Structure formats: C-alpha cells, structure tokens
Image 1 (cartoon, helix red, strand yellow):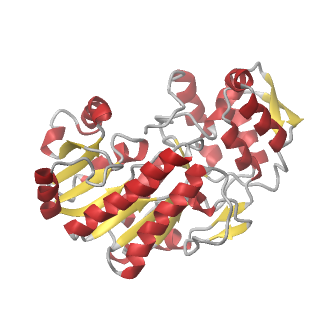
Image 2 (tube, one colour):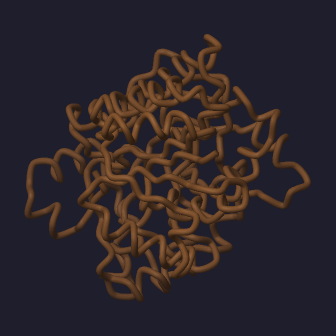
Length: 359
C-alpha cells in the first residue's frame, strides 16, 4: 500500500515526505511537469541518493479532473493508495480569483474525488487558520462559516476548499483530518525557507535600511496579534497527529497560543536585525492604496499591499484539539523571539530566495 501526496516539492510537503517514509513502502508524489527537476533535487536532498526506493514522482495536475493521470496510472493508484496528504495550493495573498478557484477549490475537489474512488483510510488536508477571514473575535477549531469577510481571494478560496473537505468528512463519505497552520515561517533551528513573504517583508525592509530605521506603525500595535509558527513545528505536529486514530475527523489549529502583538513582533525583528526603529504612523488603507496604485513604490519598498491588513487583523486563534492531542509529546510552537535570529540570519545569507508562490 502507498501514500499519495500533493504539494511536493513545496515548503511543507518537502519536509513532510521524509517523515512518512517509516509508515509505508511507497510515497507517490503528484508533481507538475515544470517542477519535476526541482522535485528530484529536493527528494535527493531530503532522502539521499536512494530516494527512488521510497518516493515515486508522478507527473500530473490537481486542476485537471483526472489529476492529469492516464487511465492506467489512475486505476493503479486507486487500487494501492491507502492515505492521501493534500498540501498543494496557491499560497499567495495576491492570487487572482480564477487561479485561486482552479487550484485551491477545484483542485481540492479533484483530489477528494480521487480519494473517494480509492476508498482511502483517511485524507489529511492542510488548510490555514486564515479561513477565518476578518472574523472579529476568537476563532476555534470547530468554527468555519461564521459570516466572515475575507482579506483576499487566497483566504476565501481556502475557506471554500476546506468546506468541501468538511462536507465529505461530516457526511461520512471520507474520513479526514484538517490541519490549519497559522502564518508559517522558516525552520526554527536553521531559518531555512523557500519563500520570502508575510513577515519576511519587514525583515528585508529593515535589512535594507541603516541602523536607525523607519518602521511604519499600522493601526494599534498593542491590540493586534501576529500568529507565526515555524515550519518544523507544523511538520512535527502533522506527522504526529496523522498517526493517531483519534485524530480522524478532527480539525487542528496549529497556532501559537501566546502570539506576539505587532509591537512585540516588530521589537523582536528590530533586535535581530540590529536596528533601532523610528515608528512612523501610517494609515493601512492609505498605504495599501498607494502600493496598489504605484508599481514604482511597491518595487522600491518591496512590500506586497496584500500583507498590510494583517497588521490590523481582528482574529485570535485557539487550538484546544492540537494542545490536547500533542500534550506530553514536546511538540509545541516556540516563542517567536527564540528563533527570529535564525530567520534573519537565513535572509542575510540567502538574499536571492524568491517571494512568489509555486502555482
């Protein structure tokens, strides 16, 4: 029997693959043809020269109703796949509604159709805490549709995709587990990441400035939390929780139970970048409008306008299921200030990592 995984060689999928090797004879990774070379390189880096003994790369595309597979390949997989890990998505706050629908929503539907045909034991689906949209208040693991508005099409399409998973889970058609990470940054031990977005815009902004740096103050920095978790925590949590029988049909919010406020987050990044910040009051709506209107300004400051609303984000996340089922494992998110220096060091040493998403 085998495990079927989408989202390789992506940021989380690459790290998760090596964790799955001890529970199956074969991990089948669905890979878009244009990422084939990158996938082979990542598999070698993660598993060594004998990676083909465990991992099989199959070219395909989740936006195709057949997953881009031949009838023969699909039939073979449907008879051998026992679990599905669905991580593939467009992780891009600026995604267009058309691309978000095709990849995040339709792609999820196609993967669920495959899982149903294969009669798998479980689907493991990676969602996001930000299916909450701009819900004003506490958002729990049992919440989904609370009448929220959304910051962008990424949030909205991930919301609709999770709704598909939960519909099939709650109807009894497919056993599933839903994992909702908060904002995922690099590894807490090495700082390694594949993409500079979200919190990295502030890190890179400060590194481009002299020791005394201008820091935009957006909204009330003491009233807004920024819920950030490192990749290793998310992968450790998914690896452990996905092995538990009691995690079937459970949703987990993989979030920091004690997230920093925007002021605390900014202070930690200033310390790590060895900068002294001069707060500059800036209305979010004005800054976002200016960045959307003037390409030269956006290129100069290298900040995507879609990130700014998160500095006034009204939602607080709690993860009671995650805390209960990870109790006594040692798997918990470290405090942001304990690893921010590793994130900054990685950015300093790897200035050419891109900010755009895999699509």
